Image 1 (cartoon, rainbow, N blue to C red):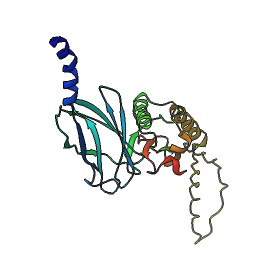
Image 2 (cartoon, helix red, strand yellow; image 1 turned 30 degrees about the vertical axis):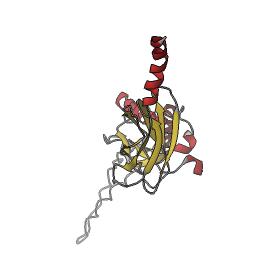
Image 3 (tube, rainbow, N blue to C red; image 1 turned 45 degrees about the vertical axis):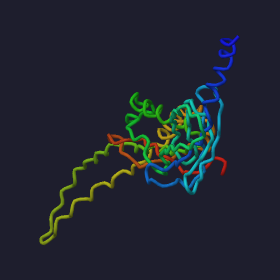
Image 4 (cartoon, helix red, strand yellow; image 1 turned 30 degrees about the horizontal axis):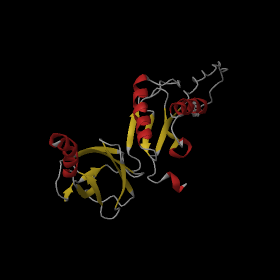
Length: 255
C-alpha cells in the first residue's frame, strides 16, 4: 500500500511547493524614465492554466503589485490609449515559501504628431498607390489594430494643376508712320500676366478615397482617423505626398 500512497501524495506535495508570491515593481515611460501619468492596464495570463489577472498600474507612481503562483511562466500585455501596446514574459521559479519578487518594465508613450510614415505614395496625376507605400500603410494598419484607441492623421499633399501653355501673341505689322523730330520710341508692351495655378481638387479627393479604403476595417475609424489636406505641390515635384502622423492622445471614450 505504501507505494500507492506515495504515488497519490507526491503530486500534492509537489503542488504544495509552489507557494504564492507577490510580484511588484514599476512600469515607466521609456522616453522619460518617469510614470506615464495616464491609466494603464497590465493583463497577466498564466501560460499553464490560461487564468488572467487584470491590474491597474498606479498612474502617479507607476507601481503595481499582484499575487501569483510560483513555478509558472506568465505572459503580460500592457495597454492604454496613451502607449504603444507591449508584451512581456516572466518566469517565476518554484517557491516553497511566500516571497516578493520585483519586475520593472518600460513602455513607449504615444506623442501627438509623431511621424509614422512619410512616403511618395502617388505619381503625378494619379490616385494609384505605389507598392512601396502600400507596405508602409499596412504597417500603420497593424499598429491601429494592436492599439485600439490610437489615433492618426493622414495628410495628403495637394497637387497643383500644370499651368496652360502661354498663348503666342499675334503679330501685327504696324503701319509705317513718319517719325516726328524729337519723338521718343514707345516702350514694348508688358509681358502677359502668369496664369493662376489651381489645386487639382478632383485628384486630391480620389487619393483620399483610395486611402480610406485601406483603413476600412479599422474599428471606430471615423473617430480615430482624420484626413486633411497637406501642402501644395507642383505636379512635377518628387517630394513625399503622403504623411501619416500620430493624432491626439486621448481615449475614444472621451468623444
